[in-house]
View (cartoon, rainbow, N blue to C red):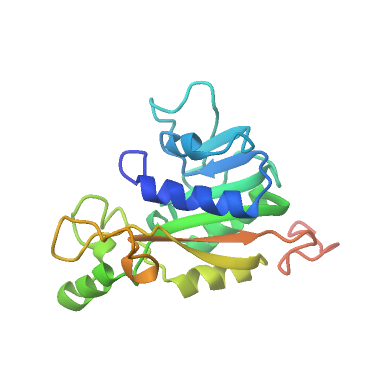
Length: 224
């Protein structure tokens, strides 16, 4: 994400996942930036609520905005506030991705959909960068949106494990099907799709209708 917005292939990837796995409803965009993702949503994905640590001047004036506490990482919304909760190109910026996933799970109603995206560490570009420079492509020092802005590199298996730890069901990996050819400024041809040719990946998963394994029904609270 650059100055409050991500790139079109990421928005399209997330929109495809929502169209395939959700009937629509209230959407909460965590790490919303300027709210560009709103333009990629079907009419069924409303109302749209953006959440971020700051409200960017370009955020749509007719959309609802709620703050994120920069210390705790909590969003000022009640449990189950969203039928769909998305977090696009944000998790790589946080120190504790598991805490962020737990907050996204809290915000999602039972039966609702969660979509999270992040740079793809297993693309050909990222693997070659790791081989040559000993760091992932999106985590190089001082190059645009890289380190120290990007601090947490996650693999597909990490996203799946974290989703399952949060009690989410049927986690599915997504690919942006868009990526830069190593050593050039050109993009891979449209026929090149999937893990090797995608600069970004995502995961979509369902919050189960029953209680989370970490939140059993009737369990005493910490205050008790």
